[in-house]
Amino acid sequence: MKTKKIVIGAMAATMLSLSVCSLVPAAAAGETVQISVSEATAKAGGDYTVEVSLADIPSTGIQALNFSIEYDGDLISIDSVKAGAATNTGKSDSIASQIPEFSTYTDTKTGLVSVMWTTSLSDASYWLKQDGVFCTISGKVKSGVADGKKAAIKLVATPHDTYPESGVAYSDIDCGYLKGKEMVQYAVKVTNGGVNVGTTATTAPAQTVVLGDANCDGKVTLGDSLAILQFVANETKYPLSDQGLLNADCDGVKGITANDSVWVQEYDVKHNS
Image 1 (cartoon, rainbow, N blue to C red):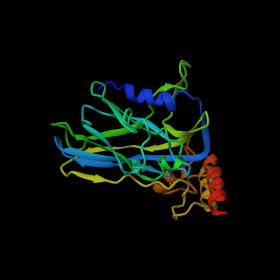
Image 2: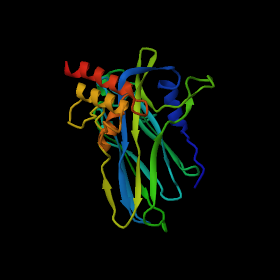
Image 3: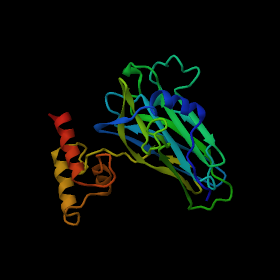
Image 4: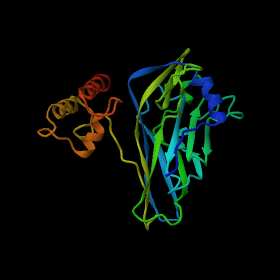
């Protein structure tokens, strides 16, 4: 397997210096954006397409989103990354002709791709607001790859200093907005996908996660908070379904704890009162 290193292009680095990297981010409490990669099945030598989708975008919107795509270049290639419908916000900023709002940088030697969407527009109505496909990733399965292999496609943070010359790496995916001179950072939960090598070329949608819906009844209520607390106390006596386990891990920190129950309670007060 090739050595992997996350890189970012000069264009993306320039834009990030204007919007994200130059500021110490503050966390947006209780706000978690879901980013998911779908799975596809393609035969050796065949084409594939997977989708990177956004969900649970907070009402304020996203002014800047930056991540890197990690994949195994011995199994697949990434030939294009194209903006999806969710990036159609209705208006481009004044510098878009020089630095596009949606930009990518591909390093074929290390096998990683950096992706960024950002706007300098201060009017939040033109920020990312709609759940849906953020981008599509297309490429080929390498010839000779055996059936049954899976080429994982993972979304990871593009590393950079918390602010110039700080010497402190910031390891989270950049996702948030500027509030005055402060960068407000959303928590991000990633569901990775990939390409399954087989004889039929199909694309499957990413698994839908409903944050907080631990009992899978289609609603996020105090009943889910109780289900999470019971599971934390005794997961053998009070198990959650596979989907419930995904939904219950909702506070932006990996692993189901009592803090996820608190997240549900706060959500219930905010949305069900």
